[in-house]
Length: 233
Image 1: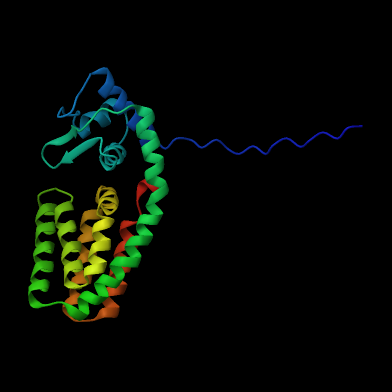
Image 2 (image 1 turned 180 degrees about the vertical axis):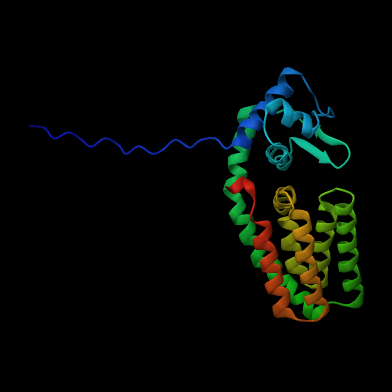
């Protein structure tokens, strides 16, 4: 009697996350309405009502589209279409983004923790002024209902400059576009801008006090916070 080969093991089929389904529906709307670059999407509240989901879930789908460069979201103007991609292209790009996120976080931990420590040791008064100016920019953006992206960017640039390490600064420039992905994604999470600003303030205090170990620990805690993003779950 001939032994039968064991059938290949079957794994569970992954269920699409809700925000992925919403991305498809939003892109379907873009296609059906023949929207082009510069056109506005419906307001977040209107999308939530039409699709029967919470605004938080809609916001997550819009953040994903923004991270992938499909839309541009500005406080006060809403979501503006940058280009009209195919649904297949967006889902492929989303998978690639999800796959590289852990490596982006790893690179940030390697570089920015060291930069924070060096900034605490080497910062000048002018460097410190620039760091605190960035915090003010971010706080102002959040107070106006924004996410604080510009202030966040300025803060990390100021810490990098305060470290006075040309090579590390060049490496940060090299990964800048990838860091932008994590910045948009993190600050798009509910309540995250305020928490991110608070963690920036802890880093700034350690740098001001010249405490390299505390600055490094605070930066690592900050990166752990911003790496907790919905698109990885």
